[in-house]
Image (cartoon, rainbow over all chains, first blue to last red; front, side):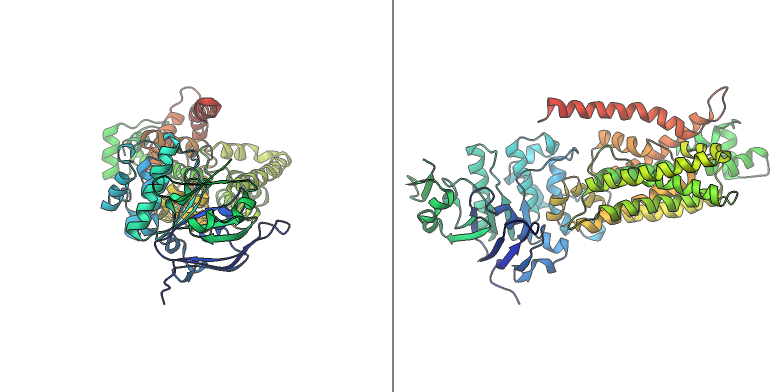
Length: 264
Length: 316
């Protein structure tokens, strides 16, 4: 039985410790090929939700289904072929090269024979293509930990793309990026959604630009999903001002007429 | 291979290369043949197994703990092995159980540390280091206490703690070989998972590594490897720490190349160190553990200083 939905959340709750504040219940869903922006103030629970979907943290109750199957029923490698995750940042003390980091995206696809080989995971056309589209081909032999912020982000995205998962989770991918690199990064993701029918859930902070790229916005506040809808619906909803506790200014993008919220 | 031949040539009595090659392929009843087959060859093979095994175990522990300063003994293996060894010497002297007891003791200590550090969700590797340290301190204090109680055995235990590989027999080499081959066979398919672990446990999870299971498998295999090495040689220091670093500097941290190269380098290094240990003029043979520590200690300090400098400002 295949579900037409990529991601289904049903009454998902989570508890960090017995004394911590409530998270959820959260219910929502996403079809294939949808770009979702997950917004909300700091501490609203955006990262928590992403980590629950990625099964890195275990939910307290409720169900999380990816392509119709409960996320906890997957073996680790099966899950990684369906859900990829790009973290905010990643530190390593070891000098893995960019290519080695990107190649790790193929880890969940390795056969036993490939696991036993001395050589790396081997060149695949797909991997070379991703190195080029993410603009990393000239950096492939550089140690990952010497990259600039923007380059490191692209390397992590490239690894996630190599995973070829239909559901991609991004945790504030453009934090610490300058506007130019942030825009290029988001266009890359948008392209993938349009051409590969990938579903993307992206935790994001910038209310001015989020509406320019995503199809849907999920708004979180204090561990609850308080509002969902298209950028048009959400960004013009008065509730958003009370969540951020600020008198946000609504403007329109001069070219696309999409809504943008600016801080006063 | 070359260091192995050199290793066979050198010893308290030098045997020329031609004789070595000749007797290797056609053993006879001559004194040289006996020395080569019953003394030198087991010792050289032991050096290869111990050096290679410790270097791979060190590389695995460094990846598991994401800590370049980890060594095979870090989570209690050495303290457990010493404890096992002295227990065997005290309770059942002259049974020759020191090496097997050390093997069991080392494995047990690591497992105790692991069980103590197991929490909800993913085992914190930092907690594992701390638990290993605590277990190590407790066992070492008991070991020292036992050593003070029973002074007759002090020199035996002391020689064992420093680590040496002379006087091993073929059967000991064979037992160790079996365990080392088994552990290496367990570790090898996880080379790519170890690369993922270098990026942190969370990222490894997202890449499809069953983190907890892989950590346990690798920890058990690395401990088995360490225990098999300790069984042959006692506690030889610094090979497991230094060799993986040298290989990483030459060839990068990719475990698909790091693991086999570490084995080769470790094997070659310890074989040569053993030659040096056997060729000290005047004093005569000294335990090879002293040689590795003498060479490894300064390199370890250099690594520490270098890492501090990196933290100090060059990288944010």
